[in-house]
View 1 (cartoon, rainbow, N blue to C red):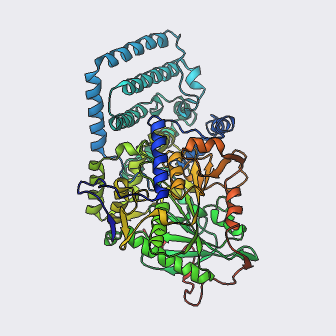
View 2 (tube, helix red, strand yellow; view 1 turned 120 degrees about the horizontal axis):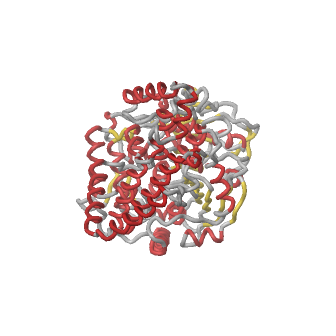
View 3 (cartoon, helix red, strand yellow; view 1 turned 180 degrees about the vertical axis):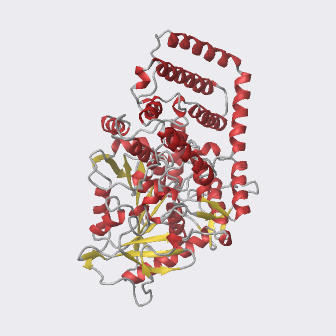
Length: 622
C-alpha cells in the first residue's frame, strides 16, 4: 500500500526533515518563487531572435489551417494534466468571486468602462490604432483589415477584451482567487471572439461563397455528428487514417513479458552491434506508449536503435472499474517485474530508465523505493517534462484549480466510477486552452466545413486510457504531501521514499514553451536529483520536447549541470546548441550504455520467452 502521512483534511502534516538534496531543491524553489511574481513569463538563455523567428514561422498566416491546428494541438496534449480538471462548480465560484470583487471596487469598472467608450469612439470614426496581437492567428486573414465591417468588429472585440482583462487584473483578490478569475475570464473572452461566428469570420464567409454554400452544409453535418459521437465538442482528429501496428507504433519488436498491469516490448536491433546496457522507457499511464514510436521520422525508438541502444518500452494495460484498487504501489511492483525481465534478457545487473510526465513520477517513486531497500538496479535516470516538486509549479494555470475541495471532488468522482476516464479528462483539459483545443476546431469543422485534420500526434492524443481510482487518488495526494521533497511522506510496500538516497546519475529535459510542466518547475526536478544532474532545455512545448528528431533547422536547446539554485541563473550560464536535444542525448546515452556486443539474434531469454510481436495486445484494449 502507498502511505501518505497527511492530516485528515488532506493537507500535509508536520514535515519530517528532508534529505540534503531535497532541502537544496526546496530552498531553490522558494527563492525562485519569491523572486518572481505569479505566472511570470519564463525566459531562458537563447530566447530572443531565434525564438522569435520560430514563433513567426508557427504563426505565419499563409500556413495551411490543418497544419497550424496540428502544431497547436501538439503543444497542448493531455499527458496526465490536469488530474483535477475543470469543474463547473469551480468556474461558477470563480465568476461569483470576480463579480463580487468588481462590485466592491466600482471605481475600477467605471474607469475601464470610460476608457472603453473613448476607444469605441475612435474605432467608429476610423481613428483607432487598436490591433490584436500579431501572433493571434484568429485575425490573420487580410480581410480583417480590408473590410470596414470586419475591421470594426475586430477592433471592438480587441478593445473590449483588453478592458475586461485589465479590470480583472486590477481587482484586489488573493493570489489563488486572482488566478481563478483570470482563468474564467480568459475562457469567457475567448468564447466571445467574432471569429467563432459565421458572419464575424471573413474567411468562413468567403469560403461559403466560393463553395456555393457546400461548406455550410458540411459544417452542419460535422456538428450533428459531434453532437452524437463527441459529447457536443468539435472532433480534433480524423481517426480513419491510422491504425496502431500498421502506420503507427510499427517498429519491429517483441513482447517479452506480460503481467496484469503491463506488457514489456523489446525492439529488434537494426545495427550489427548494440550496447550491452538497455534503456527502459516508462510512458504516462493516461496515454498509450506509442508516442515514442509514431511515424518513422518522428520515432524515438528508431533513433535509439540506429544508435545501437537496446530499447525496452512499457505498454500499460487499460484498466476498467474491476481494477479500481490498483494504486501506485501496484504499478511500482509491476514495473519492478519488468525491470527484472529486461535485466535477465540482456544479462545486465543495471539498466537506464526513462519516464515522461506521470511516467516520470512513477520512475522517481520506483527509484526511491529501490534506494530505500538498498537495491541498485538503475545506472541512470532520464526524466522528460516531469514535475515532482508539486510546490514548484504552484503558479501555473492548473494550480489555480487545485483546492482541497476540488481534489476531494475529483477523488470522489473516480472512486464512484472506479476509474478516471481519459476521454472525459481530455474534454475538461480542452477548456483550459479553448482557443487551441475547442475554437480552432469549431471554426475548421463547422464554419469552414472541413474534416478535422488527420495527424498522428492528434490521433495518439485522442487514444487515451483510464486511471484506476486508487492510482488517481495517489497522484492527487502528491499535491499536498510533496513526498519527493519531504522524505518519508510516502511509503511503497512499507518502504519510505527518500530521494536523498537515490544515487543514480540523472538527465532531465524541459521545454521553453511548455505550459503543462513549466521548465522552471522541471528544473527543480533536476535539483532534487542533485547538482550533478544534466538539465536540458529544448525550445519546444510539452510533447514536442519528446518528439524532437534531429534535422529541424529551427530547433535549439541549452544544457548544463543543475548546480545553480535558481533556474534563471542556470539559464544564464547554460550552453546553447543548435538542432534537437537528441543530438546531445544520444552520445550521453552511449557513454553510459556499457560495451558494444553483437546484436542478439532473437528476443527473450530462457526464462522470458517471446509472447508475440509488438505492439502487443494491451494497446488495443478499449
